[in-house]
Image (spheres, rainbow, N blue to C red):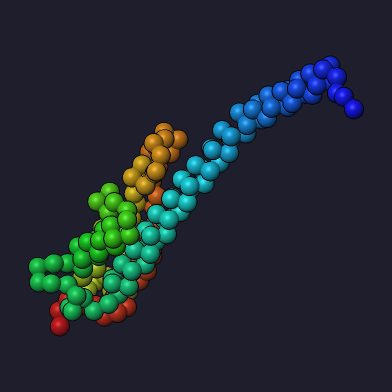
Length: 169
């Protein structure tokens, strides 16, 4: 059986049209898939940063409620020690600890939002808030204006002094 040249040309045209459709489909689908993959990676990075920051604040809460006389050196304060430890923890985890903003403030009452001195014995059993924030631009893997001006935050609210951490022995 012999295939005529007319049938052969029809098959070539059909195959040629199908490959053109495949190229068009790829041109539409690939950019969308790329955006989804890059967005997933970016959000994963932000989630990782948030988890690291929350863990560092939790560790700072433990330090805030321990006996500081064994941990804080002469001339240092528990507040400064906590801030340093948070920055070191975040830096050791691969994030820029120098980009952090750390605040230790009152969490309730008339003094809410004012700086909280952990070593002040009058603050025993008062509610305090340890909060850290980092600009999203310091965490982002891709340059983007979409999240410009936003921060990733983590905080912990706890009672001070439950561990008997008075500086005087």
